[in-house]
Length: 242
Image (cartoon, rainbow, N blue to C red; front, side, top):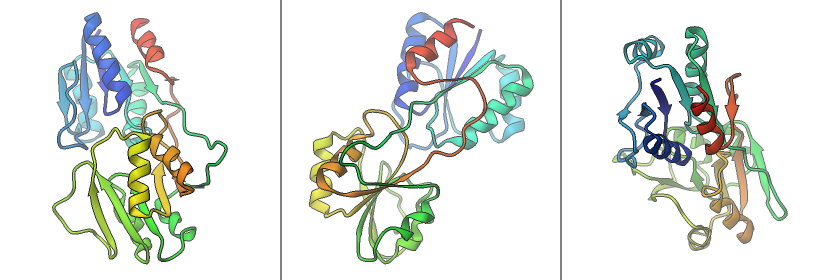
């Protein structure tokens, strides 16, 4: 067996380490969203495959016998394509998708489906903290009447794409105390985040609750209709059973 691990999450890193320790033949793939990704314990390729046809060619040329998809919950185009191709080729596929966050006592969340919807809920003049990455930044252009702070792992060399905004460098993970102190010092009124799930990324939501900061939480996109697990242990069990 040769496994392809689609990585880019903390869960994928843990899986890669365990696969290496167990001597399971596997290759990890990173989409290249980060300029300096953390090294994985497996041989790793970086960058896209070049489209669906090229992905099919890669699977054949490298004799990939199974695919474990541990990408980000919002990497939906990757997951949908991978599940579709694997089903067509008869290659076993499994998605590791951690559970989404749900609100608890004291949380003040507004759920939205698209980034552009946030502006309908946020008053002009508000200070808005974006924890949504760089790929969808342009979709918040209708927040130009607000002060927008966009945290980025890799700050672009180009100016902020719309008025009253700025980039803030930051390399996760962040503790709840760090997020609390940051939001308080910036005078944040609204936090916008994707419903990625997971314990570590949730610290920003916990800090927002303590400060009374409102949250616009972007719902996950549709996921592939395919075998799915929620934990690293279950993903590893699926690999061992192949």
